[in-house]
Image (cartoon, rainbow over all chains, first blue to last red; front, side):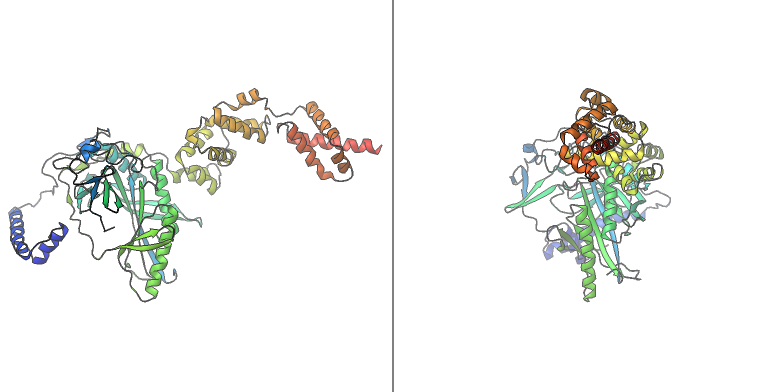
Length: 96
Length: 486
């Protein structure tokens, strides 16, 4: 299965990545190989098997509605590239 | 425009759930306007690598209660999905939501319209998700506060059944009231815990195909919802009439200019690449759990309104006003249970009690007034022990002190004066003190009787039995005529 150039550019756009022409060609091959690998599942005869969404056969893992301690603001902001007014400071968002 | 075009409107409502902790972590749900920024955050709701979400059971139960109250079928097999998009309010790069299998589907809600008719609005889906962080824009960049990130959020989506701003408002008002009855949302639109976004389009009458729709945002009141929707319907009709095309876009409502404006064009449907959330195993809701949740539902506002009208003979206006807030309705129900007469109780509550509460800026839950005490006050008036003026004063005192009316009346000497001898003495005194009005009365100005009665009521601080005073005053004044004439 081979991904088209447009498909690769669309995926790059969704991931907010700017690719050079050389990278488009390279990732096209790589992504196609990933799809081919997953497509091997098609070789299995899965008739009569219910679809599942999870590899682990567990259900209803829940917690009680109990408040647990949060991080201190210092810890919460520790990895931020920039902060201001105890908040994460980021480049202006022009959309919305 | 309504003769040429049919409006087609659907509403999406996002409601934060009033749980103690967040949807997938133990951080406290805080007031996102008041709380200091980034004080209720942890590695899970900050989207740090390697952290695992765990579902808050109470959030699921709140969602079930809402879905049941909106007459939805409950999905037995629930899975959560990742909705992928890049925006800094989402630290993970995706929002955990529900997609193909929402918790509630195929519901409905009846709304009452101003012409007295009822209309059924279909509910397409109710699903669980998490709220996002809050951005504040500054000159030097944008600030991000993640206190709201991960707060349980319910999305309620209608079928495109709504046809006007009034219907949109009636529906949204009923949803807010229902959420408050269920105790799952405060309904505070100013704080953004309840957000309403209509999808609005029009199509030529008789056409089956839907027109191009716009999504309307920034609506922080029901009035803005109704006015914004109607503005948008007129705008789209003008565009089509002028031979133009409606553009698919997100528009905002400008509250002071009272008009909508373009915010963002949506040239193609966004690609969210939904897939099943691998960090959360499926959630099975069995019939027993649904049954348990159904049993926790209170009597809902529509049912209360109908009961007040049909069983108690109240007017639609009275029934709606009493059922508006659950605390008031339950207080009224308790007073009925204590033997109160519905019509008279409704008057007391809607007029006197509400006035006293409004003057003090309080709600019924804030005052130590027992429902049975108001019933007792009502019967004291009915028996003639006190008159209405006194009863109003006693009610104000009951609100402050929580004491029962009989105690207040005895302590304050407020009982209605029906002692004839005592009243005759007061009437005579008033006549003696006012020779001028007496002369005028005797001279033919008999309407002055009311003035004399008023003086007696004032002299007794409103406690005299008015009917008796009226009778005595007339008699004593006429006796003066006889004396004068002889």
